[in-house]
Length: 103
Image (tube, rainbow, N blue to C red; front, side):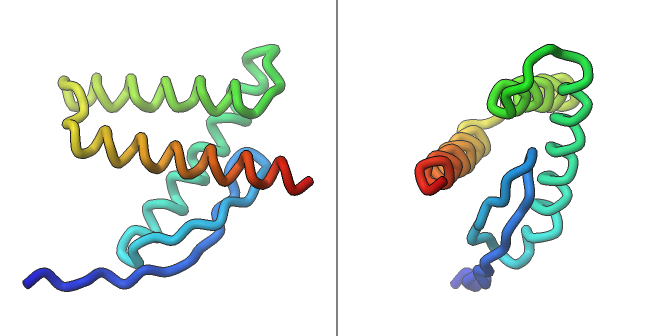
């Protein structure tokens, strides 16, 4: 029987916004590092492009990371990983929409 992973609530800061997430405790460090890298990438892109909208910058950063992942692994992401990424992106978008509505 598989051991159930402990879920924890964290907040990560990405491109000027805080996102509350519930994650496996074993994933916390990786998620925090990913959020930091994503924020750094959007700041870098902000200086390179005239786009000032964070959503545009995040989309470009996501495209660059996905392209790098494919080049590095020399293959398309498997369906399970792709589904996980899509679900996480949808969750973040939903949370950001809710934050915008509350402002």
